[in-house]
Image (spheres, rainbow, N blue to C red):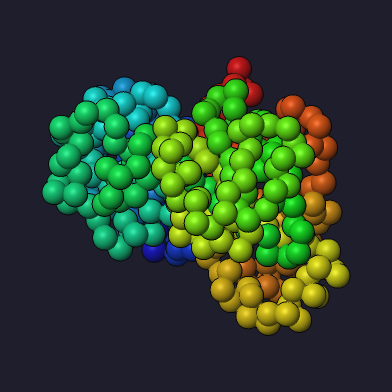
Length: 318
């Protein structure tokens, strides 16, 4: 059984399909954590780094490493410049903290396969271009670079318009690019950073924008493996859901453990609980009908923070 210590990424960590014996949320000193978990048996402790008070001070992380068995601790990093700096990551390795990542999808891997020094030794020879998106192949992805795919599970679940809204909300804080594959709907938004591509050209186009912090991809029928992560959109109307299940009775079996987002949803918390029970799935986020003309929609901001884009959270709380 595992322990989760969360703060800003509480929603994100809540999507993990892992056994959890205890979960706490808030900001804690290392002493607080020692007092709570001294003599408490657990398999792995997953810590949202923003849950540690003064986490940008490497001495705080050193104190953590001195009080816990670090092979049993997994640190989910935020995307702050300080934490992702070569010096900070190098010092994490130096004090014996090896299990760190910026990708929620890497956490289950690290639960089963703790990093050794050999896996992270390259961080002590930084040239400033590495990232922490996967536990073993971090050298392949620049800091902060994420390729997020969006897939309509029910017909016309709103991926194209949602990507447009997400891009508008992200671009004041991040360098953003968006693509749609084998479609031309983006041209109606009159935004040159929304681009269409076909199956044959998308890989090279993604390579051309490797300096972007985030690339949003409307996948349509394209292969999902071109993305670091994929969000599956469901419009939870009765007609749409019944049609989906009639076409594919095992759809929710295949979506188990995936990042499911309800879009254009009128469901409340009780409805969502029923939906999860009946479908055997977990809902990552519930998005209502939104006005795409708004430049600052609080629900979109909350969704992006849940995805790990913490700069919006910092701005909104100033």
